[in-house]
Each structure stands twice: as structure tokens, then as C-alpha cells.
Length: 65
Image (cartoon, rainbow, N blue to C red; front, side, top):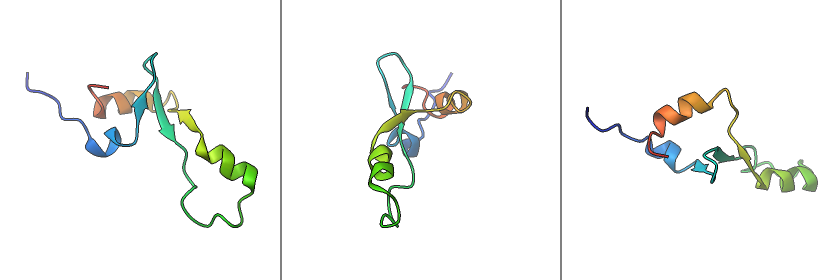
């Protein structure tokens, strides 16, 4: 069997936790920040886990994570 290539775009955007879950940054934090509240922008800074419905596809493009 040949090696499976990792999607480099995904590898730069996702990390794994100690228990093996995938972690991602939240969206909607790059521009048009004036109309967003401080609380909303503060919560967008935090990382969150990848939804369970997407994990199967993510493991396929990140085989060695």
C-alpha cells in the first residue's frame, strides 16, 4: 500500500487534543468587526471541537493526526 497524502490546507487549520479530538478556530473573526459586540468577538477567539458529523471526513484528509 502506498502512503496517503495529508491535505496540507487542513493540517494548518486543525490540531488534535490529547484525547484525539480535532480542534478548530471559529469563523467570522476576520473583518466587519465594528458591528459585532465585544462579547461576540471575545467568544470567537476561543477554539472549539470539530462537530461529530464532520470527523469521519476530517480523519480521511488528515490520516496521520
